[in-house]
Length: 288
Length: 351
Image (tube, rainbow over all chains, first blue to last red; front, side, top):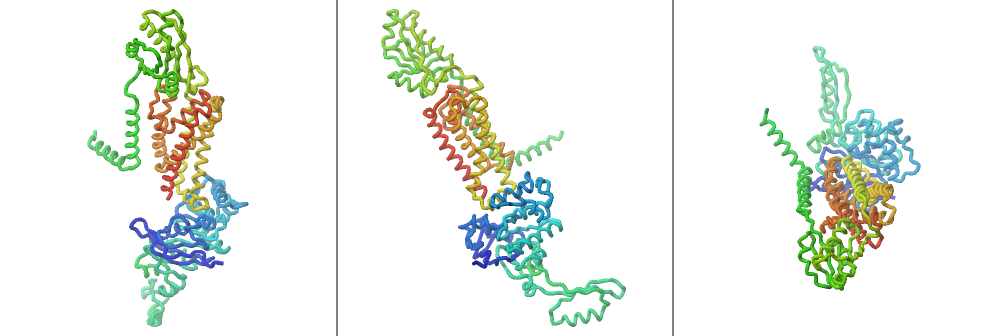
């Protein structure tokens, strides 16, 4: 019985002279959510395409569920679900028709589109044509399409990008449900907060290379610095912010000084974000 | 009037037009194709009738006939004359009996055999009889009495003029096929442009299955409508099997054309533009049906010739399998080649 849902060795892809994915190697355990993070052009989508059989690697190997993607692409594609970055639904068809079509392509017996639509928050909207849907509704339908055959691995490419909070939360709920039933999730995103919230481990991709791969907790421990944030009253009664870096030799003295000098209104500690860590490691941000 | 402004705008639009690779290519290909077709067609109205002649005796009045709009080509045997007429080399053939002059001089009524292709107009038949009479006058110096034996050879199985609307049946049927072909091309293009194709290709469906599905859709739409049309207008009554197979092979071939169009088109508009270009080229051989005798040899290079002709002779002459099997062979080869090219081009686009 294989333990790794995804096993990648020296995977490489180039578009002409541009090396999009540069000899990356990693593994994803079964039932794990891996956040695959990086700025635009880092090679995230190209990696997903190679792992899902949409693109042939120029070098290296990719195994998904124990199958070589290059040699068993249909076997792999029948066991995975993909939610693409761009909306690609049949807009002239209803949501139910869209789902039924793919249920037939995936040979799903006894498919219940209404139950699935309810899961993604589209209850009662199944008979509407997709072209009448909002962006958030379309994205939820894309997620529904990706999970309709109960895939063993779910590839999600920027699933909540540009969505309203309700839609984004709905999709995050489905991702956790899928993991709950044992599915592995490969989550490609540039949304660090989302990755932090959902992922068991995160990989930082920069210029086609994985620069770091670990749990968010360990990354914060290793690369982040915690801070103490306080709101204090000044002599003239104004409320001002003060910030002290924790975990340094001078921290106790700085904290004592803060309380000695000011009347403190609020105080709380704050951990480094994944974005802070990404900037620290790569020297640049993740903004699109 | 701001002429400078108008000129600047016009100049900008020309520039943008030709920066668009699609419009630029279609424009150039369109002009080239239309010019090639135009110059390949006969430049003038040639009313000279090509007639095959078998005469075992010397006919001295032959030269005077050559100047009256008939071009006579002597053949060595009557069998060679029959074959040449059957193959469409001549609009008619005349075979004189060996004792023609003696019979005329003896006041007898010699029998002259006239060979015609199946679609020879009645006017041609009358002209041949007049020609022989005039010839006899020139040869003997007096009116002659002859009996004519008309023999229609080739695939014609009945004689008689074909009504214009029946002559147009293959054209209408093939127009229907072509229209559905454009619809198929448009569907595929939309699938690429809206990226739904990506979702299909990431499912367990293989690319071959995808092409098969599209091919079935294209052939079924085109073939179904064409068969329905031919059935309603009575085109299937005489050789239903021949028409059925012709339309099926034609639908398959034009589905391949649809694949080719979809491989280059970017949207509905470009499907129409490329489709129109393909349509014009494919329709050129219809001249063979609409204007009998106008068929230039090069038209047979266009595979749709075999579709038009097999539907035409099947529906209007009741042609059988023996008459059309070379057409089916040509259509099968063309379907395989064109569909293969279409799949290759589409596969490249998908990847």
